[in-house]
Image (cartoon, rainbow, N blue to C red; front, side, top):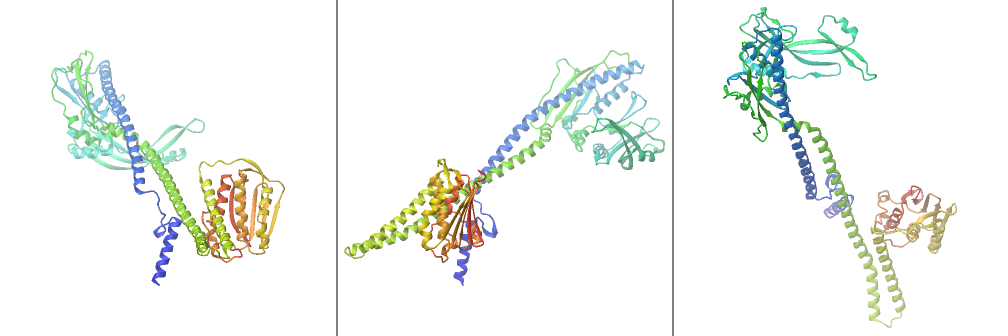
Length: 610
């Protein structure tokens, strides 16, 4: 029992190896792991190198853009401050130092920059004393044209923790869906004496409605807008109503009676760094480089001041010093020429990475596809090599086995002749020796034919061949064998059927098919040959091919389970016939199909798709 069990396991392992499967039905991988790893590493290195170089180039562009952004902010402050002074002078307003500082800090606080730029600025007067610096503020317009404001410096009212909470809410983005969205709104209230009383954050939910529903909701917090339609480019009005409003955060000034305070329409808090996201304010506040402006500078602004200077590898830190000159106004501010200094930390690498994220993703998908394709190509190549090696080994073993028998017979008869040269069976021995050499010669010719067909440099001759005539000649060739076994051959055709190809090879292919039709037929059986303009069908009676063998019949050296069955013919086959025929037909662009019929087997050769 143990021996039988071992034998069964061995046969199972051999079947798995032939079918390309291993333990638990897993496919055998032909590509060596080291080769596959090397391919993956090469593609990964190319991907990282390509993305790194591309990101570095984009990063340089962002760093230049961030430097220009700081220059634009400086120009904006200069232009806006001069306009503020001119407007105030034309209206006859008193330009005090307090008014000057408030407006300057308002402009510095409300200037927005790129999300990947953190900056700060300070201003010194002509004596070199610092008079203003960018910081978190809240402001409220006090007249209709927004020319008069009150500024509250939030560090004088809120703790650091409260500032962090306020900054977190002020950077909350709108979350939108198809017909509704949520957003955070800030409300600032103050007393009639212009003292900051409270700051509150409300989470509001808005819903898109039609005009009729908006009219029904009259009195609710609602608004409308005109939008352009996609169909014809015309405009239409859309209506929205607030379906829910909840206060999510609130700060109150403990020194103020809230009953006396009123919400100021159009008032907002401004938090430096908030444009960079939730952590922007904390990074801005904790950046020592941005917060270390001196209280006094020598001599104020000098002509030919400094430009940009790079410091660290990962952050492009820069100083920009510019003059701020004003018209000679009769005012109490005492300020005529100022020095503005800007400091910037540019996260250009982060900006480049964010800009390139879809390139990273697309390139990663492309590289992954290339790796899969390369792995598939390698697997196909290695599998083909392994199959060719296995085929060569099987072919060599089969030929050695086939040669062994005739060589043994030749040796035996030759030894008999040596022992008894005058034997009366001399002629018989010689005929047997010649017959065995002819059998060996036939096997060698088939080997040569296979090698020739598998050669990549094979050149087919092209000539017009009458297939009906060729098949008639081949049926005459097998006539002796069919008459001996009383097999009837029926050749049916529609007249001359012309195909183009190598006549010698096509003769060989159809000869193999007819030889098989005779060899695997039964005595007193029938061979039917039907040929027309598109195909040729050769059918023979006899035992059908087992279903498990049908997919292998065109493989080299495959004899299958039919070879061991009893049949009228005692002919031996190497399992080369159908392989040669299929190979020849494929070289000619023809398709050969082998299938069972109700009383035997038929082979179809189709060239309709040529």
